[in-house]
Image (cartoon, rainbow, N blue to C red; front, side):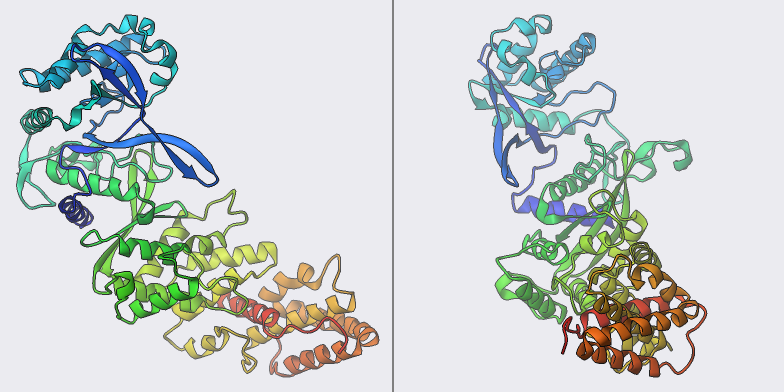
Length: 580
């Protein structure tokens, strides 16, 4: 289903003229080899573009539509019309002159196989170059002396004949297409993607752009060990995909990965998205919604309003977005030379936005710094230092899938947040929002729903008498009494000493906490009687609502309610730090 969706997307792009035809693909070119019609190298011209990256302007190779690259690992195989210096000039910086000569010979053989007999001055010039160029004397060539290091740095080169783009020569394009279509006859079978009889691709083109995957590309479909093979078949003949479909789906995926509007990085997962019909409005809006970016100049509130309209099945004509348009989300992660599929979702754009909107509604909580908590920021709340650590792949993949599909959040997300709170003794707004959303979604049905619905309010729920929630509020009031009595500056607060115990084994610590609080309250009443009376009355009210002694141990869900009570009390009605 993934390959079929990507192949359809390729055909949508092709019909709009936004992607290369079969046999062609974008290639990054650093330098152009200018030759004359006699095949003599005359000059080398950089083909770099200035691109802004943050506050800096950097040079990067131009992307040009050229004959599709071959797939090679350690083997020698040349690209047509373009390649690195080993293939087009027979030289490199690796100190392997013999291999470079072999690469040059392979390139010469390929170009003769494609261009022999072609009536084109550009074709004749290229063949003359390969027939007369001497790699062993390349370093002495006047056009190379000053640029030898740049030429052999590993970037790709392309031919130009008297400045003309040889890849646009009609005769050369036809010759390349004939060569590509009339190569060695392979096995013909029914293609699993198109359903048509086609020559099967033994090896599929590489996919580039997945974060942390090999820079040379990785395979989405591959078989490299006998254990994965059946019925005596080898390589990708085990899952027969025609050459057309293999090219189409990889070209579409590479196109998506090269466009930042279609890509989000969440944990170790690279998420690509697209709409049927190849309309860019959908992935742009989607990326802004889940990534916390901007779209069409909309403010966060306007973006959220548009999200709610789509979630309710209403079109956003001003944005050009229809809730009924089929939309696809694919999550990929690196796995050595291959790619792992973390998730693949297909639904109407409106339904997916409905799930995302419901997720954001569950995350709403008092004290939040942003109206939208992006997925990457949500997952960063599960690690100590997001700059040095990445969220667990298991947590990331399961969480993203749950958000988009509207299914319960993974237990691993809740456990990761609890672990960070215990380690830091700090309930940040992001972590409180995650715990609130977890209870609201995972217990939206069943006998516990009514009880947990009281603690998953956006604001402080003063009417909630659920013991874990009350104890969380009470702990915060005791902490405020201590801080206020000591001028709001202490070396070690009760949160530092007792927070984890109070949230897990409350019976063992609350007796001691009441004694400490009485001591602190007496001091506060002497120094700031107005504030002392207010906090003392609140503490007494909360304590009076505890109808039974605290339990010996909390369940995980009860611990969550304790943390939410503590957080809500912190951000509900903040008491004055001065006398009243």
